[in-house]
Amino acid sequence: MNISSRQKVLIVDDEPDIRELLEITLGRMKLDTQSARDVSEARSWLAQEPFDLCLTDMRLPDGTGLELVQHIQQRHPQVPVAMITAYGSLETAISALKAGAFDFLTKPVDLTRLRELVTSALLLPASSSQPPSIDNRLLGDSLPMRGLRKHIDKLARSQAPVYISGESGSGKELVAKLIHEQGPRASGPFVPVNCGAIPSELMESEFFGHRKGSFTGAIEDKPGLFQAANGGTLFLDEVADLPLAMQVKLLRAIQEKAIRSIGGQQEVVVDVRILCATHKDLDAEVAAERFRQDLYYRLNVIELRVPPLRERRDDIECLASNVLKRLAANSGLPAAKLHPQALDTLKSYRFPGNVRELENMLERAYTLCENKQIQASDLRLSESSCAVEPGAPDLAHIDNLENYLENVERKLILQALEETRWNRTAAAQRLNLSFRSMRYRLKKLGLD
Image (cartoon, rainbow, N blue to C red; front, side, top):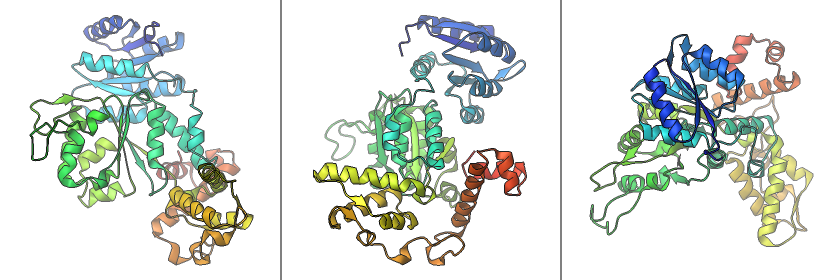
């Protein structure tokens, strides 16, 4: 998107000095502006003409900027909104991000930061234009996957930190990459790092870099992961494995948007969006004091749950077909086919390793099968390793009672929603629940 095409920004603030400062700064960026003093005037302008961005103060004479964010999300979702908050109002900023704000600024407004934010926001693609590549990699048409795509599209239009939760092998890094590629940072680097794979003694150097001679073996300057991801996205996989000492330094880097390399004399400003993931329960890690609560709140502004494969068994056939085609292309041999009995076996298996386990299983079966047809026996799964029918659970295959019951609850609610065409009131009645209870369960299970 070309910023010089006179795009228009709506400025909402009741202080004339602030409005004038923003108007002058944006005018120098060759942007048109329109100002409003309160929520009602802003709504009026939004109804009259299109805008490419909205900058709003939090405290307004007739309401709050948060109300305006929610209004724009409902009526004008294509317009990114940035919140201007008082210095130190982190909770306010987080509330705005959760409501759908693109990003936030603190007062007094840093003009360099303002220009960076505006430039980034105006590079956002239209919300309706979803790149076709997402369907080529994030396979499956089940309800959980459709919901996941919808959330990815929404989160890509924000700069909020996202905590991607999910089991090992479920595709958390792919989800992070898709959030990056659909957002305004797509032209910048995507830098994934497995926090559990870095030795603790090298961690600070890996993240922040070091200067030549700063320690034995530092024979030259080396940039860190934050510098490598500057202008793009840093994906912290298995973030729960960070030692506490490193968590403190990471928190400061995120708060200050600046880092200091080992042996460096000055801090260097970095512009990085943080996405993180872990297969561990971060709430439990915080409760056990293995993960800092203040860092948890910084990283977990928005949580995105990636469903395990056992919650989307209808996608297994599509996933298996794609894997077998890829194996055939890599080997230069004809593609193998799944015998119907083999497909039934896969659909009844619990897949503790999720998509990654499915890929490994099919690769082994592809090598072992005869006449390019994979039989159930080629999968090397014993009957005891497959999921049992509902109503007769095998205790040997219930890893965690709470998770098991949650999965049953999710399945029944999804079934009720499908049967009522996602009419929540009707689905609640079918399950003999109050609407309030239904809404709570949808939120708890990540289905809202």
